[in-house]
Amino acid sequence: MTLDDLRVFVAVCRAGSLSAVARELACTQSAVSQHVKRLERETGVSLLERQSRGVVPTHAGRILWDAAADGIAGLDSALRRLGDLVDGEGGSVRVTTGGTTVRHFMSEAVVAFRQRHPKVSLEFQTETSGRRCFDALAAGNLDLAWVTLGSPVRGIEQRPVVDLPWVLAVRADDPLARRARVEAADLAGIRLIRLPQSSVSGTRLDAAFTALGVRTSSDTGVADWDTALLLAELGLGHAVVPALPGRRAPGDADPLRLIPVPDLPPLTVGWAVRRWDALSPLARIFADTVADCVTASAPRRA
Image (tube, rainbow, N blue to C red; front, side):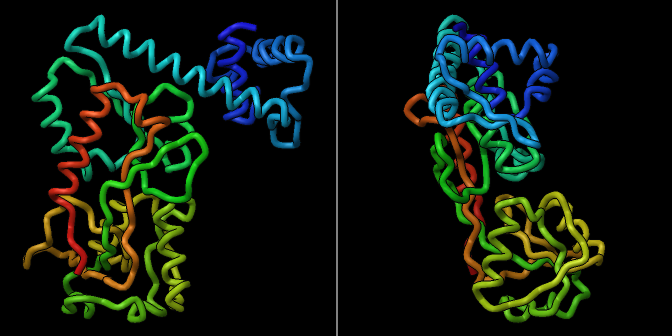
């Protein structure tokens, strides 16, 4: 049993596919299978079960997966921290998040962090959903994930940073643009630009409308909050989106208006890590810097 065997096995369990891991590692599917078979010979148990859409760990496989994933992540973290010691003032902080997060939540913090730690490398890995951010974090190659917080995820610690109130984005010439606030009931029957259905924010918004007994409809879907705002600005629909920190409030000459919807529960965003007590000092400093900057510029509920 080698460390490579365990790394490949963990990757297969996470991906649910031998072929996907083979592509990732630029090797053959047979080579990936050999790593798993070697583990099965040494443990004396079957570790994977084939299904129509790939493979899943057996009960025994899940036991090994959990232990190996924790061990590999801890080892990788230790090796990186040893590298930071060798680099002296250097080192790296690796973050995974959505495509527009750095602009909305981290731009000020990145500048402040780089001014204080100019020799530290900041590396960002973009993912298309919170679920993929969690998967990337669990793989052990990253320090931090900035996500919309949702249900607990096994093996991941989540720490809220800020609650974002919801706003209705409309063009300035829309009748609703003259309102100081909008009630959720006012949106009944209005066609809204739909947030990604697989996203936590989209799921939370749908659940909030359902809880309030408000039925909305949609014929347009988007991949992120920025696109929803753009379509609303172009007059292609109404969008209910989180009020983003640091975003300049529209002025009289702007075509877009952001109207508070105070009866919708706020959306919580923040950090996720494998273990806070295992974070490197640099990663902790960056996480705290982002939290401080976001909190200072966060919009307040109406």
